[in-house]
Image (cartoon, rainbow, N blue to C red; front, side, top):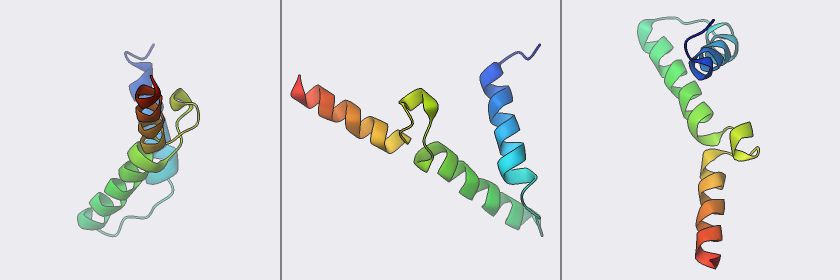
Length: 69
């Protein structure tokens, strides 16, 4: 049983979407590609926990809701 299901899910996504999908030519290349994937994953990709919004859209939605209250 995994200790943390969220970490296990993240690791599985990273492996399937980044590590298995890329050929790394050097450590610099690997770091660059992994950083680019992490940027997309953390800032631009829709998340089901945010109602299929990306994090920036979710924050904008919260700000709008707070301004209306």
